[in-house]
Every structure is written in C-alpha cells, then in structure tokens.
Length: 155
Image: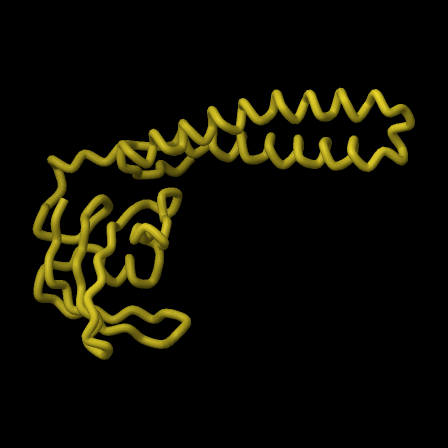
C-alpha cells in the first residue's frame, strides 16, 4: 500500500468530501425506497437510476477511505525550502511567452489546475520537483515543450 503525501489542508478536504458522500448515501437510500413504492422494479427507471447512483457513491466512498488511510501529512520543517517539493509555491516565467505563472505543487489527489495546484506527477510538476530558484526546466506538455525559469519558491 503506497503512501500518499498530502498537505494538512488536502487531507481535511478529503475528509470533508467523505462526510458529504456519506450524507448523500442516506438521501439515495430514501430515493431507492421511494422508487420501490411504485411497484414493479423490472421497469422502474427511477429505481434503477437510484441504484446506479448508490453504486457510484459507494465506489467514491471506498476510494476516499483508501486515500485517507494511505495519507501522510507532509512535514514542511524537514524539507529543504530552497527547492521545489510538495507543498511549495513556485513562481515561474514561461521563457517563450514571457508570462509568469504561480503553481502550488501538490500530490495527485489534491491537484486542481483551476486554483493553480498542480500534481508533482504532472509534466510541469515533475520538471519543477527538486529544482532551485534560477534554474531553467523543460516540460513536455500536450501543446509542446515549455521552458520555464524558476523565479521564486516559497512555503
């Protein structure tokens, strides 16, 4: 069983999602019971839809429970702050476009590109991992190759 390194905030988000999923299972169970009241289950679309939703929710709950069980909170005090690792905020400049971007390097379970959190397993995350300010890294992405200069690393 591989450990998943997460931030404290990331673990709390996983736990909150698990609680929400468990609350949803009670709602789905009520929907199943209501659909049963219509009689013949073989042609009861509402019943089948609710049972499918229940199966999907149970799979998500098992996935979240597994991730939480394997989660290890990252101890920032033991990480070299001059290098880009999980939990670091990294400001970079795309050398081709001359645009700056700020990324937070996180574990794959915490990744959310819309909020600037990229997985250390992504092409950009892998290129940045372990690097220092001033280094230039190359990352192969679907749109081509990015050449990024690391401008700042913070925790």
